[in-house]
Structure formats: C-alpha cells, structure tokens
Length: 156
Figure 1 (cartoon, rainbow, N blue to C red):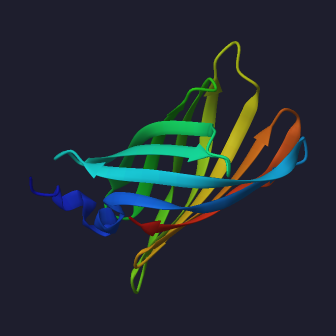
Figure 2 (figure 1 turned 135 degrees about the vertical axis):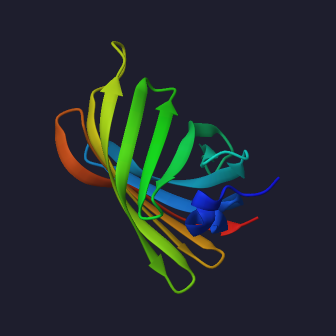
C-alpha cells in the first residue's frame, strides 16, 4: 500500500510506540503509567490511531481511538473517541523540525449524558527521530485548563 501523499509530513508516526508516563490533576493523586500508541496507514488521507495505558502493576487504565488527519500539510485534525463518554476534535498547526515535527492542538469536546464533564483539552505531540513525546492538559470537573499527562515513547 502506498502512503497517501498528503500524509508525508507525519509518515514518521506510522508504527507502534511505547514508553513511560506520569499523570497528575488537582482532583487526584499523581500516578505513573505505561503508554502504547499505534498509528496505522490505511491507504486513505488519514492515519488510524489506537492508544492504551496500564498501571505499573499491569492493570488497564485508559484507552482511546481515532484518526489523525493532515490539512494542506500545515495543520492537524485529531478526531478521538473515548470510552469515558467524550468525543474530542483537536486541531492545530503542524511545525516541521529537523527530524520530525511538533503540533499544538486545542480541542472541542462533546460529553455523553453520563460522562464526567470535560470542557476542553490541549495536546502537544512532538516527534524527534524515534522518540514521541506527548503532553496533555484538560479543563474538567470545574478545574480550568491544567497539565494532566506527559509521556515519552520510543518506536517498538
């Protein structure tokens, strides 16, 4: 399968990434986790995304899935679904670097009737060679936009 030409700027994401992360939020105790993400080429102008995390003891924690779309090679749309009852549309500019890229994404979030209230999220994704770093902030349950998660993953 040939990669859609519109995805060349994010082609380095394709594959599976795994590494360690740390989380915190004013309403919970700090925690550590292992994260694994997979970006798959499906022959269309988007990448399929699957993410999962687990505790140091091996218990499942969070998972999400979605699609990463590149617009005109200069901006990213990240469409995500979460089993906690949120649908997230994160958008922002893509900036090329010497060995990858960075993108800063701000989202609109829709919450199901039974979900905890999440008002918005911000994601920073940085690819530098075989290192993928993520930062995640959220405004939720009455707390303004605040850092929540950071992970550093390596290509598996």
